[in-house]
Length: 411
Image 1 (tube, rainbow, N blue to C red):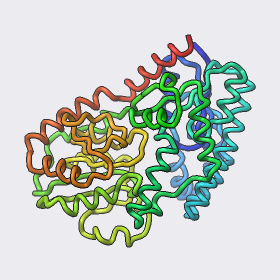
Image 2 (image 1 turned 90 degrees about the vertical axis):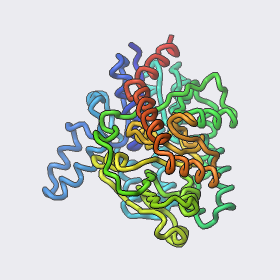
Image 3 (image 1 turned 135 degrees about the horizontal axis):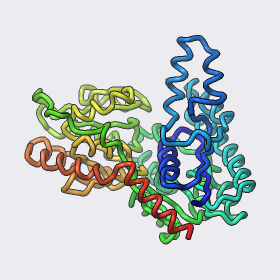
């Protein structure tokens, strides 16, 4: 089977899933990344030197950067730049500083990954948007297939949306920081130069085509979900008189948080409980008009997240710019009807597992939430359909689709 290389500078679990999927299907794949916990090598030896209380905390964080399906012998670490970036997040420096640190990390990683590609000359190399331009060019120079894994919509489409939002909803504008100009230029060039582009949704494909990427080079590959971890409760939750709507993600305007809060405020649904799980960004003043409208849960440990889905009646995600929101898959697997926008990149079908509403359309959000709140039979039908839909989008399905496509590209 063909030898390939995959590179990602950070902690995106999608990259881990991709590597594990290819290795499980017979591809010889080397994985280059910043920090990855394998249980062997330098990281465990260093953490063993720490005091017990600190060691437990550090190891808990590090073990989140792991995947049982990735062969440790095929992992190469480039931790220096990643550690520098992590320092900016732990110090809670300004968003502009953090974005600059990401760009620096990505540039350094890209150069190192490119050199490895030139040295090894693999059959294919897969990089990730904003950190793959030099790697792509290196792959082309040695005759390797240069593949871009584009995990979010085209950067120009995002910038256009953000500019409009800053005018429409100025109180949330600071939750839409802009990347450095050189990152914008790099992302535009990556999308044009890659031999192939993997995208997770029709939304991302459409933004790529709109910005000049040849549709013939694009492969739409939806994500997967762990249907054993995320599943409906074994028994229906005890009735408490509430209609509980769940949102999981950063509370930012990129994810349409203003429109969701406004819909909840105006929906006139008795005992509506909107639960927003994730980090709240921006000024408290922006959220002040919605005090008492939603319950904010800043953080939930990963091993408890599934319980939040099981406690809800519906899931809402009116995002403006995504790749394919993982939380939407988790909601489906948990048997929740989903109300989202096309820009969410979900596999939800309108009127089947939930509803697709236009971005920024508060009235449509209200209408669909009211339908679900006041029609328990509709909610039950959609809940059943949601679970069945998720069963066709497991990580095993993702791997099978990826492996079959890649084989055709290498023939």
